Each structure stands twice: as C-alpha cells, then as structure tokens.
Amino acid sequence: MGLLKFESEPEFGKLAEYVSACQPCGALEAEGYCAPEKRLFREYTGFTVDFLYASVQLDDKKIFEDYVLWFYELLCPVMADMPKHRVRALLLRHFSVVENGAEQIFAGAGLKKLKRFIGYGKRAAEDAEVTGKSPEPLRYGKYEKERQRYLDALMRSDTKSAVAVAAEFLQTGIPVEDILVEILGETMRGVGEL
Image (cartoon, rainbow, N blue to C red; front, side, top):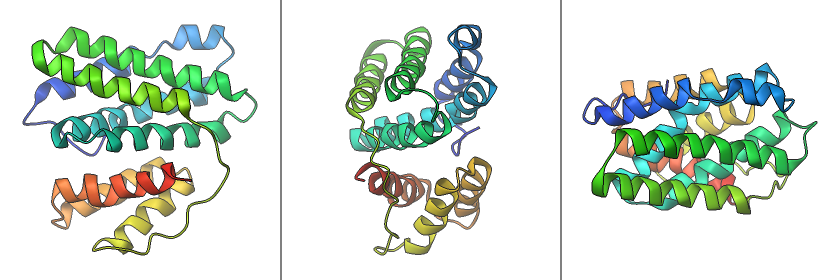
C-alpha cells in the first residue's frame, strides 16, 4: 500500500488494486524472474500509483519521471544477475499493466491525461542509465531532515521503513502536498539526477 489512500478519488485506489492483481507472475517465472522480483513489483504498485496520482494532480511530469528513474535504480542491484535491458523491459511491462488498468477504470479527459503521464514514465524508463553513484546528503530547504531520513531508508532498500517514515510525516501534520513534492519528490529528483 502506498502513502495516499485516494479517498477523494477512489478510481486511483481501484487502479492500485488492478495493477497489484495483474502483475504477470506466470509470465515472469517463465522468463526466469523469481519471487523477489515479483514481490518487489507488487510491493511498489502503491508507490507507482501514488506518484502517478501526485504527478497528475499537481500537473508535474517530473515527479513521475523521477520516481521511474529511482525505481529503475532500485531494481538494477536487486536484479544484478540480469542484463539492464531485461530490467528495463520488466519495468516497461509494469507500466503497460498500469496503462491497461487506467484504460479499464478511467475515461475521457482523465484517461487521456493519465496515459500522457504514464507515457512520460515509460520514456524515462527507456532512457534510464544506471549511474552507480550514491546520492549526496540532501542539505536544503524546509524539510532537510525529513528528506534525509527518507533517502536513508531508500538507500538501504528498506521499503517498509520508507513507507513508515512517509506515513509518520503525514501523522505529524506535514501536508500531503509537501510530503509528495518537497520530501518524496525532491528526494526522487536528487536520486534521478545521479
């Protein structure tokens, strides 16, 4: 489950459920992917929809592009025994599932906008290169300590801690927009620029 609950827009909750249920597990096993990769995609479905939602709501394609680059950077060491083109293909397949779900759940202008943002993410994945660099500490802005805590959890590949830290920010009263843009988005932007 992601950070947002989509109470105001239940279609996004349905999209997260659809994507989680439709990850092509049988096909992945047939192609040599194993349980950790499948679990990772299921686990990150909520994040994918969260960042897609934030990008669409704030009309900022960079939020989703940075998330896609971060996700790719995360996957490459986890799937270190696979060539990068296969990791990229798996990520693109994931976004195709997101797009298929959007086509079944949304309609009209909303669908058109979602597909445009999913396209931004696909292009970011196609253009991604793994740098192998570690991000510099985040030393700027109002939420410096929060960004650093979130980054530390990400760099440990500790998804549960990253989600817990983000949820804690919400519980302490930080506005959702600030969490998504100023903390998570800026952290992803920093990781994406590596």
